[in-house]
Amino acid sequence: MCPADNLMARSRTVFRTKWFSVEQVPLTDEASRNGETFYRVNSPDGAIVLAMTRDEKIILVRQFRPALNQYTLEFPSGGVNKGESPGVAAARELKEETGYVCESLELLGSGRIMMNRHNSQAYAFYGKGATRIQGYVGEKGIEVVLSSVSDFKKLVLSGEFAQFPAFAPIVLAAWKSGNRLFFGA
Image (cartoon, rainbow, N blue to C red):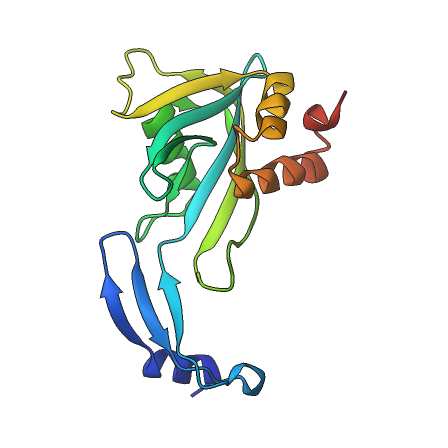
């Protein structure tokens, strides 16, 4: 049995919701053993989508986030369902939250957010040529906001757009595809 398997075998769930669970995890690394109990948040992997319309508007969503007790402005994103690929999840979330579908949806990369407590993986996608489905009826509580790149920069710099994990798709899109749209004047 490898050390990770042994760790999982000795972990125990102490709290569970339909969105996440909290697990008590024994510390096995000598450097981290200090007698404290460690808790890990288990949640599904997620997908975040930087989607651009054909006329280069960024598709954002405004929605209420109970954890913050406020409305936030974000890229469309959501969980990857069991048995679903991250790409399918990204396209589904974009369509459900905004009514848009992309001509192309490129996986930019994946990584982890808040590695100190969470074990989920986040997948970043770049969608091009997004168009809205005719007859789309929006999700209750979600407002779709289209933003030019220059207005988006203002939203970020003012703090109105504060979804930190959203910056990874911007950088990855520039590095992987050479799209410097976000880094111009």
